[in-house]
Image (cartoon, rainbow, N blue to C red; front, side, top):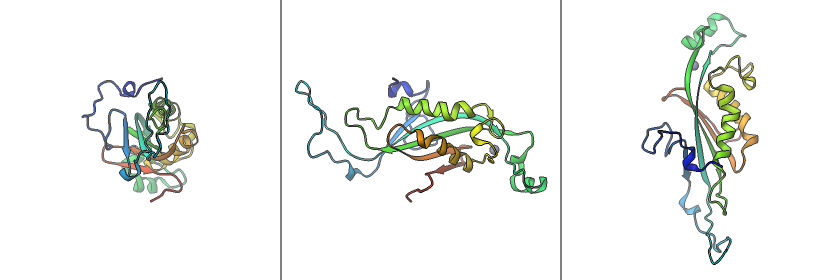
Length: 197
Ligand SMILES: [Zn+2]
């Protein structure tokens, strides 16, 4: 099992600037509502040889960040060449163009009282590698990714498609958001079909 320290890519440090808040390497956690973080009235844990641990309760948002490079073309084949050129401009280039995508996936839930983790980050890392990075990295998103077939690969559509790939497979807690940076300045975020605003 990978440790949290083991998940940080080589060269990544807490001081390194990333697009998301509180990013430490590829992992970040945000606590929401300090009032929610009160100790349980009775320490719920296990005593062993006179030792005990105290479970803390609160909803935590844990984020894993991954990167991939991919080519695409924004093009609606049901419309004319002129319509596509007007709507998409350079992004309609028939010979494709590429992006260095940064994907942030946030899962919400309460820490497990026995581990203090929301879940094993190694599991989330493996899930993102398997379902998103492996099918998309160094690929043509229009032509080579089965779950994007017939989808216009805009950032908006990609976050919805990624949600549909990941949501049923989240190991523990619930998927809270998918954020995809197409450039350092442009990103789209999806919080599921029924977001709590
Ligand atoms: Zn593009």
